[in-house]
Image 1 (cartoon, rainbow, N blue to C red):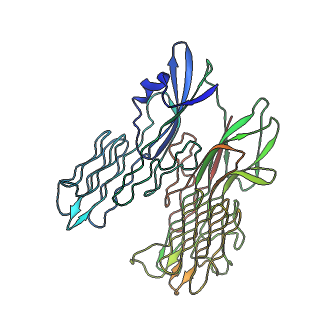
Image 2 (cartoon, rainbow, N blue to C red):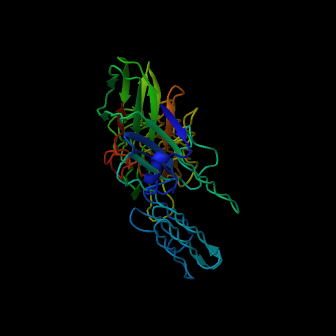
Length: 457
């Protein structure tokens, strides 16, 4: 029997070691109550390191980490304090800056200078206590909380406060199974091969848990210009899928995007967008391919791929032509210094145009990222439920990064979560099934991390 409860006596001694912090955490805890074993699942705030506060000038307050509080912001007047375990730092005097978020270690307080009060750093999450398994700590993105697609999410929870407003409160959801034993789970790992793979449901299995990371975008290069830009990270999705013993599901593991993409105008495995043509392939990079679990020719769960990085003529100026990260219900937009940047794939359509005066990138479509409008003059869009748009070529000196592909969980699946990457940073890297290098956005002129799929039953 499985129940969700707001308060469970069996778990309370364990929860004393797990502070309610940050943005989102999911973890399994094994505790003993009398003669029976209880398995608890917790969802609450957390990211491995809190995000730094935003600060127009000077040194911003940093987020808490796994071992120390975030440092105070510095700029002009002194007095802001660092975060400590469980507690965020204070701003410079009175309310001249934002306070740090509480956490396993709290974020630093914001600084103040010449009429500018700076933001505080975010607190970190934690899942290192004995007995915890399958932990995933996810950071928010600006004011946006992560994991809003989780069926237990309540609107407003964890949302950053508007100007002069109040931030959303936290939320804790517990699920436990008391059966006398802890059910074993068998992991099956699928790595990138460049071809479809198959998972056949074993006898006696009626549901599976899946975790997917999409392929990351490749890194654009200077080519005959001065500066290339990184590719975007792949996204993360997880869900529980009802299955029938003996049925076969198709498993796709997305390919990381690449500089000097060998496929030319064809997408990579998983639908990462390539080039308009291969006649001049020394600039932008291809997008990362999506990872997916498929049934009857359609995706049940998808993790979007990251967009490929672009290029620019002269280095040193501000701005970026980096590829957008994949994942979430909408992939991250590609970066484009001038012109209209390409958008990420959405829930119902591919990303919109990366517009440039020389060439406009092509739109993404279902499963496939778009391409730059000419040659390799822009990054390819990431593959996804809907692919991101290809980057535009503008003014003879800017080649934009491609947009990230979107993720998806079909209505037939339950407990679905989709999380986007953050720039080049892959999501859910604290998950115990994560493998180093997976879904990480490529450096300049590099190859993006391939995707990963893990099935547990």
